[in-house]
Length: 117
Figure 1 (cartoon, rainbow, N blue to C red):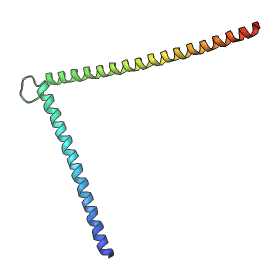
Figure 2: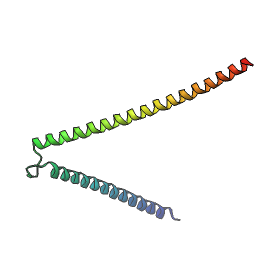
Figure 3: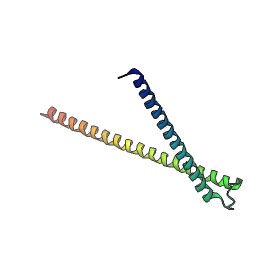
């Protein structure tokens, strides 16, 4: 194949790849923008008490309080899960220790019988 044709072909493939990459990036940016706008609109519908299309100071305070409450709930849930895991680990350790004590008791009993004979 002619090297000149190969160069043009390679340049065309590269240009196509770049344009597709840009299109995908633009599509992602548009999707993120639409998502932000939808979130903003939902927040506006939920918190805009006077229905003026803007969030005033009192409404912002309510948003802040709701977010702080949600964060506190998440922290509490996380702490509860951590405590549950710790309790399970402690229970497993207690079971393991009990089995070990049982084995040692059987071993001591066996030794005692052996010494009696």
